[in-house]
Image 1 (cartoon, helix red, strand yellow):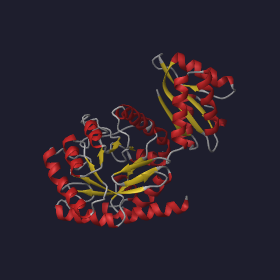
Image 2 (tube, helix red, strand yellow):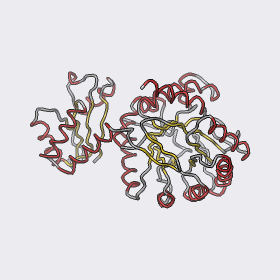
Image 3 (spheres, helix red, strand yellow):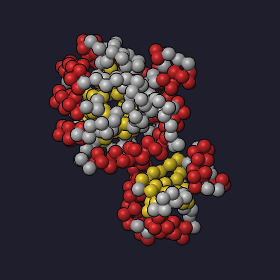
Image 4 (cartoon, helix red, strand yellow):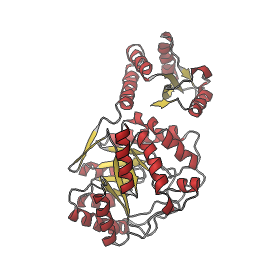
Length: 385
């Protein structure tokens, strides 16, 4: 079963769910949320529905697809959903009741946790800036610009001095259509840059953007503290052993397909639900390995249409139920360029505007090329909260 708190205040989101569950139109109101429990065994679903209806609350049931499981939706305020969860715990199914209460706690207390990464505390009642450092010849924004180690180290230090909380070093391009490179070539690009930055700024928090366990092992041995895996450990499941061994933090991202084919006509019925379910499934497996400091990334631009990217950003808070801080990478991406008819080098202002919305909706790490702008966005929003 997958459990999620959904903001039903958006008219189009409410319309989508009303179609799925045949909800009466007069249920809609500002501040309306929904507790959705997906893939509930049919017998249990009947029991839960009776508990909810007994208290004159509403519980919708989706059509039975395989006659074994259904989806349930309980609309209401967060307070009423919390009260219903208590009744499910007491009079329905104890295990499910505890799971629902835990999900509500994740949603309500989002931003209350802290990670200690290296010597720094990251407390998620505020947001942080991750500076992008591509040491590749073919990345979409700055490919080749920092392929030389000296230039890359210099730029990394510049971003740290501008206020970057994390530097994310990538040795393999993940732009649409890009090809894989060997672990040896990726390591040769990344490791000297880690060494150079840490020699100059030894307390810096370094992240490495890789899906290869060999690269991750070498990078963490050299002093990196975070592995940013765009495959969410699907490409090399043994990555988990490396993360655990070094007590490293981990970023897991959603991607439809691979960088080579991800933009070949991607399609979603509901991008938020489908990506939430993917991240939920990956978290179930990864947390069993004992990995604790995890960031979730919905993967803007990785197998997404323009409208999918905007919906994910607008509805980012619907990922809070997972209980992990959200990282998002919007910087200079093509959906901004196509929407506003801007070239890559003209997208920084648009990036900052959408990053501000993402932070407002729950992003706790923004992964960006322009660190100075990113720090301004974070600081201004701190004053507005």
